[in-house]
Structure formats: C-alpha cells, structure tokens
Length: 246
Image 1 (cartoon, rainbow, N blue to C red):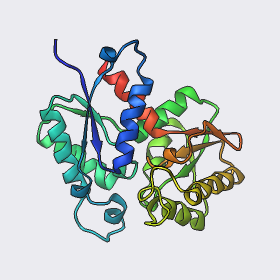
Image 2 (cartoon, one colour; image 1 turned 90 degrees about the horizontal axis):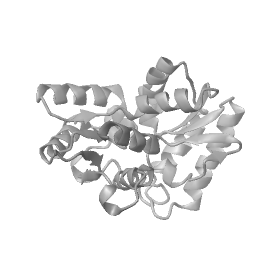
Image 3 (cartoon, rainbow, N blue to C red; image 1 turned 180 degrees about the vertical axis):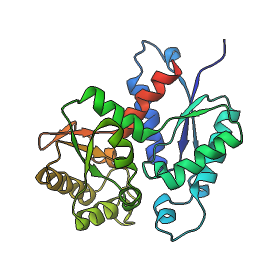
C-alpha cells in the first residue's frame, strides 16, 4: 500500500513550520506512535525571500519560485498533499504564480489554501461569526487576501487602525522583541501588542479574531480573548491536511 505523506513547506518562518507539525500531531486521534501520519517538513528559510518585502516592492524576487522548489522536493520524497504555514505567502501575487508553476511542472502534489480553509472552518464551525478582526503583517493587509477569500463565505474582515497595524507588524518583525527574532519564549512586549490589538478590534465591532500570521498563535495560545474566539489558521490547516490525507 502506498504511504500517505503530508508535506510542510517550512522556513516561512521556521517556527511556524514546527508549529504546524506539532498541531498535525495534536489533531490526529491515535493510540500509538505507529498510527500517526508520515510528515515531511522541508525548511529552507535562507532560500525563500521575505514575503512582505516582495509585496512592498523592496525586493524583486518573487518567493513563489523558491516555494515551488520546496514543494517539488516534497513531491519527490512522496508527499501528496502539502500546506504552507505562512499567511502572506497566500497573497495573490505570490500564491497564484506558485499554483501556475505547480501546474506547469505537473507536480503530483496538492497544495491547500490556508486562507480558504480558514473561511470554510468559520462558516461551518462558527456560523454566527460574521465580522472577523484580522491580525497580520502589513503585506497580508495590503494584499487583501483575507477579504478576497472570506467574501466567498459571506464573512466581513475588520481591520484595525493603521497605527495598530504597524505595531502588529513590528511585534512580528522587530529584531529585538518581535516573534520572528524571539519565538521561544515570545517576549512580553510582543504579546501585549497583540492583546491591545484584539481589544481595539473588539471596539471596531469584530465578533472573532483571525490570528493571520502563523507566528501570532505562538503568542496568543488562548481560545478566547475579551470574549472573542481566537481563530488559528495553522491549526485549521493541520486539520485540513489530515482530512485530505485520510
């Protein structure tokens, strides 16, 4: 019988890839080691350009091509379904060229769309949630990827004020306190930024919060904050990969 292997495109960022692997394990209902799914995590952070830097025009190399090379390696090793634990990588300017390359190379691997899976999850599991507050990078905000996919599920996306968006981005990227530089443990300063942002989004009318950068769930591990459900796309992607590989 052919082995069933899940592929993880890691390195975007490195800790997010590990977090997805951990959540695949947590979401798999088994009684022994041997019942777990085989998972390949390929992490090549130095080879994949920063997604926000590309979207902002500060670099010219589209990360889609490096992401495609990682996917090709996963497919070569036997993975048949894969996910990218990076919200910004799902921006149309990156994700659509990536899908085009997968088709062009006739790669025998299915790439799930984490943003679409998140919208579907909310629609099915939180039907009363209609206004989703979004915490993410400036690149993801600018790309409009969440409004694009959430409109399919009749979900409105609520954005925080511009200054809060900049503070969230800094709490992800700052090299002294941001999660990418200090992922374990997350700094108190970064966590407080996210908590304040959730409070602000509640004031803006959000009835749920999307942790729309795969590093943010490392800081906000609660299921709820200020009475609002915290939606973790990484965990949703883990469940979706399990669903597809069964």
